[in-house]
Image (cartoon, rainbow over all chains, first blue to last red; front, side, top):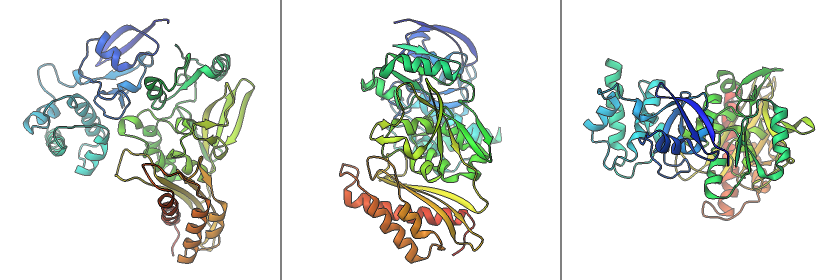
Length: 158
Length: 287
């Protein structure tokens, strides 16, 4: 098995790592780069806990090979806050108690951020469809939808 | 396993042919990586085709659109020309998986995965789409309808891969639609599905139609008898009834946890009827 050297950009920073050919982007982010925000829930693209952006598109990092990141721009939950200042979505998730165990939260924050960049004023239905690939077993989703609406309103008036 | 990222079609074909059956094509990876994880697929070589020119672009050609094999559902859905001309194909592709899956999954991959329930395939067959296939002996074109040969099987020979799917030009008063039945509203596999493409004549009646069914046979079913049932009509109730009967007669489904033979057969007719009405309205038809 031949190791592959990858040069990529993660949250705006140039990053180099070496990976195995069959290694997923999720494993490389977590185990080689120490970015453990993206979680492995299912490992088969069903739960969305590993949501990241790849060249601006929302994807499951478990369904991307690490080698595919060559020359790409990756965005993870670690790049969402502005240093110590939380992103409005992160603050809204706290304010609305939109999490309990928190395993789904990084994926939901990344996915919701991608939605609001595309659609700053979504309906509840649009939020639910967009986030249908992010499973949460704690909240029942209602508080998540409210948190996204709350953040969207704050971002529109900012 | 080896990971290869060829920059030409010829190099990709050479890599695939050289590995025989032990090579897999990587475009969106939403089926391949799941199969690798489960051990269902253990390729010796994975050929990532996304760096080959044209694989990620949608280009105008002879009034139609050539969609590169690595164009994702999200990219297709953001293409105004595709949405305007082939709304049924676009809505079918957009039903595949979640937003995250849409960021990667491709029409060509959905076709090559060989699932009888693949959402994009009935819509592509109704659209009379044509796949361009590259291989060790060069390129050939093949109607999408002839690609699936059984569950998980395709007509592609060893070393061949799809480089693009061509959505043909369409006449003025024409459109298409795709519907599927699932027991929830999102993130599920079709229990039965139907794609209908039709064109209207000067008289506002259906001049030509193509009707294709999914998840009711080992492969997608093109149903010429269903098209015959609505050609020359303005989708009057009797015509739609004949269409539904023809669709039911073409079904050869299985019983499984997602639906019985009787249910799938009945629902295929209902979906074809409703999809025909949507396509008719989109084409500017009036009853």
